[in-house]
Length: 357
Image: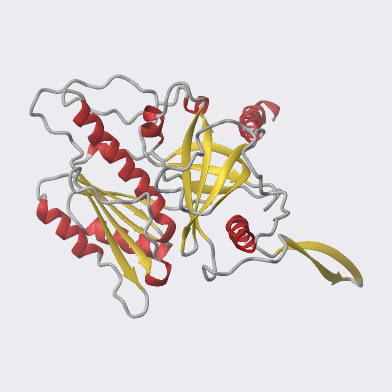
């Protein structure tokens, strides 16, 4: 019996050992409010975590831990950063590379959470009263509340007393420095622990056309895919004789003859979002020169939902002989409707991004 259980037990111990090793160190991070209840997490990823990684997918997720929001919870987030691109353009002198995550809090954007993380609840059973802690605020709402509290107190000129908030980063990493377009957004410094990256087995560069159907915060994966596409185009413009390999190892590129066309020529993003939740996301911008298209489909209040069949037909009509890959992300019902349309379209491969438990 021991010979049967020992290998599995050893793998389990190794897995948890590696996870705890990555979570041991806190990372100086920022929570940035980009408006209308949308927030961005910016943090420095230790560069050594990409050493020896040969995955070519632009889709990656991490597990994030914030001790002041929850001691036990680890939450999965898909990064909006294309790790290969960021690793390539970040100076080799830097030990960290900047990565970002996108999330949205529940409730109205103007609400500021003033209730504690946990509350005591008395329960009775068999005549005995017990006290237990019951969560009263969602994990992401707690993170969003840190920025909201900082903005509110800054406007009032008061000092905020919250152990989650740091007045300044404790390290000298430049990975969380805000870009020129992000400095106008309110932000707050916090400490996070991060486990990952974990890559999704998807390779959009094998197709001529990539279409992203995303809804709500499912737009995170589409932003990463668009980043991979733009970096590939930048690499081609810098050296037309080379193609851009999207692997993280920084391997050699394959020489191409002058006049040859790249496989991935077009990227189209369809983002469905409720009109009251919409915000102009600074990380998702169309680029006509690079052939990157971004279409926003506002829903709610009687507005029609996106028609997957018509959208796919429109893309195929412009490039009828192109191979097409579709990325689907959003609520389960949204993904299911997209799967039906993709299965009915000839020559279309697709990937539904679901969190499997």
